[in-house]
Amino acid sequence: MKFLDQAKIFVKSGNGGGGCISFRREKYIAFGGPNGGDGGRGGDVWAVASRDLNTLIDYRYKQHFKAGTGIHGMGRDRAGAAGEDVIINVPVGTQIIDADTDEVLVDMTEEGQKALLAKGGNGGWGNARFKSATNQAPRKANPGEEGEERWIWLRLKLLADAGLVGLPNAGKSTFLSTVTAATPKTADYPFTTLHPHLGVVNLGPAERFVLADLPGLIEGASEGAGLGHRFLGHVERCAAVLHLVDASTEDPAQDYQTIRKELEDYDGGIEDKPEIIVLSKADIITPERLEDVKSDMEAVCGHAPLIISSVTNQGLKPVLSAVYQHVQKRREKEEAEREKKRVAEAVKRGEMEEQKGWTP
Image (cartoon, rainbow, N blue to C red; front, side, top):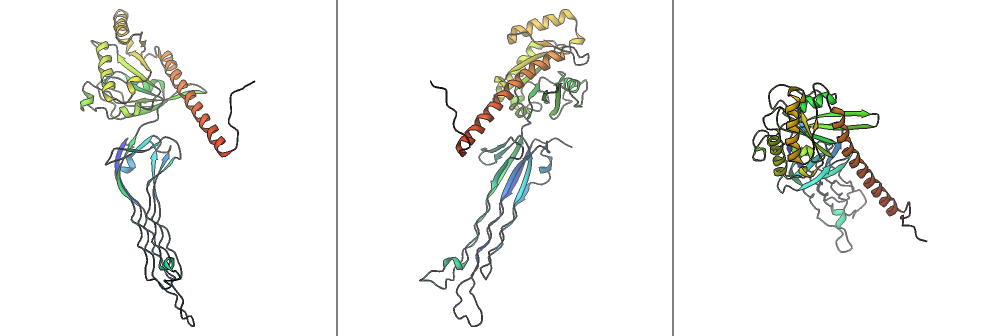
């Protein structure tokens, strides 16, 4: 299955059904009066977040979604049926953006979250609605209200706990395949990773987190060079950034600064996230050269980097433990916020009293 993280689609809600002009005609009833029913309302277009999906590939081949039109009203006070709704299933983590204004309409971050994208038009009134003491035989009915239509962008931002960034061929895919069960493509040439990969790191029965491997950045990515900044949106939701630097290059410190500049140019808040700096491929350089590189990196970033070799499993546990500490902090913060919100909703419903500080 191909990975697709953005798609442009057209959504249109259903038009409302028209009201009916009708009069009661029965034997021996001379003045039956109006009995035209109302039209049915048009169908809505809804988006629903689902964890069963992890890509937007379904919307590459179908871009138009139109809800059903409401049925017109009929005589004998029969109202028309409502139009059929359309449900668009999207992966958890999808942002829905108005194509004309670039406004984020909704951020689908929770399983089962439901959002209304286009509301169906109301059905028109039949002539029975217009009956009054001064107008007992109205010959008037309303047409159905037109539905809404818009072009929207679906942009998927993976809900990973940590993200791998670095220059091409820095060892990100090898690291991911070593510490998780993921099987990204690995080779001895750059740009082997063309789309993000996810893997679950298992440090213990209750110590797990999701790691995302992103395609490598290069200098000038903010201007569209290489794959550009297209996939950096997947790191915006991460608790920490794992920055891999190839220790075997001519100037690893310069490589680090190149990626930091691209993260700052992206301007998505990624540069402010906790960063774990790791020197990879320590097994293919001499210990003396490794110490020199480590000193240069410490001078640039302000603290000593961690050193690993994914091939020989050297230094992996300290790196994963450092990442998990940041992940755990964010989880505790999110849990406290959810508990605070739950208590506030319970107080609002009257199910519990507001907790106040103790006073003598």
